[in-house]
Image (cartoon, rainbow, N blue to C red; front, side):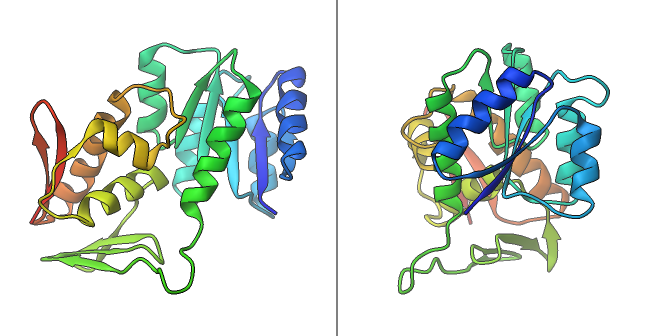
Length: 226
């Protein structure tokens, strides 16, 4: 049974999210401040975080950054700040998804299920194979990417996107195809999510000296060049 921690300073929002998640069989723990959540992380950790951005004290973006320094666990932002800048900033901080308030609890459940579904290990006999190209290795079992034997820290979405592209080297993928594969059929966000994630992946692998490249196919999408 997956454990989800919910952080929101509004009690009614915390209770609403908890009620819907528990109805779907998830175990839920709620927090009103980032300090409470950080204290809990000392002794345990969840399978997913749902974080508000606007909080008293440490905000959700700062908390997301600190979580990413130690854990590769899925993070969904829910926030009344729905401007494009905030969505992009949340993704750049390492969140896996973003919902603007007011949101449909059913939509949140769909997003949660989609993320957990993608993280499930492959069934026996259909294991995803490790990919190796030049000086880069991508291990789906360990969800690790190495360049020159040095591990690179990727968020869940970044890893999934890189693995999809690297699984079919030199094949162009449209933005629509990538959104469907990585974010799911129910995702109602913009294609900008793909562009921002590609940008972060490129920066990380370039800094480590990776020889494979993520190439833009203008007016269409992206491909993994080897």
